[in-house]
Length: 315
Image (cartoon, rainbow, N blue to C red; front, side, top):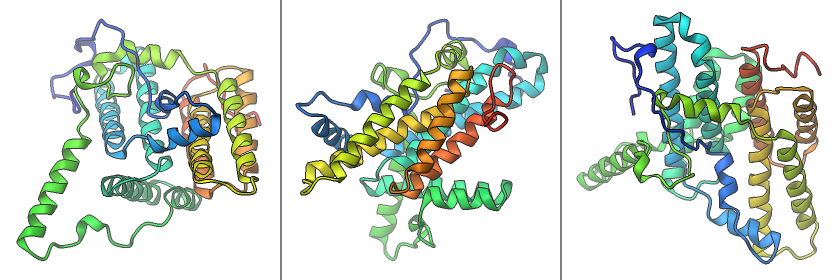
């Protein structure tokens, strides 16, 4: 998949893949991991224990970021192509944001996960400091939580064995960040998409999720985990179910925030979601921060077209 534009490349001459592929983002893909189980609590506990690693998610986020950059560069060469490609840009933006927010939402299970999250967290803080104001910086800090003062991967090895191990580790991580080819990706699973799949990306963006259904599903999960928290003697399975339910609920809430409102019903759902998130004062603060970041990103997408409605302008 191309990640940069050649000097002679033009949008009007890109060879578009004629096949329509199923595009799914990293937050929506979590729904595929919910197993059938004798009880909902057991299902959520199993879900919690089979969540994906973060390196591949980071790789997809980077790949889609590069495609956005490629598209911007090519649109500068052919400004008349903007209308034709705007929804490709919208789709890639949502895919990128979903991957990046999943990185901060999902738990770390390995040193590779810790590295991927820390790398992205530092980049997010750096971006906020360069391009945002005090509120943006504070929001980014809430979202990433505490980071080590010095990145672990910058620690100097002290012997030949440690040097070899560091080189092997970084090579493996860089390889894992490189998205898998399409023929190595499970059908229906998230993967990286390029401008060549423009038609598939347009279909993905046009088929927006039902925001009201997502809110109903999130409310149900939050009520369920509140019930589990009130249990007299929570078990290990209950703890895993609470964690899994919270992750899945906020994945749904963040998806509501990322997608632009297309009608009055979407506006009402987004406002209700904002009220719900802000009322959840017992949930970890970083989850609310992730939602606020997603909400701002969704408002940015909505602001580029009169097809969509900006929530802050309404309520």
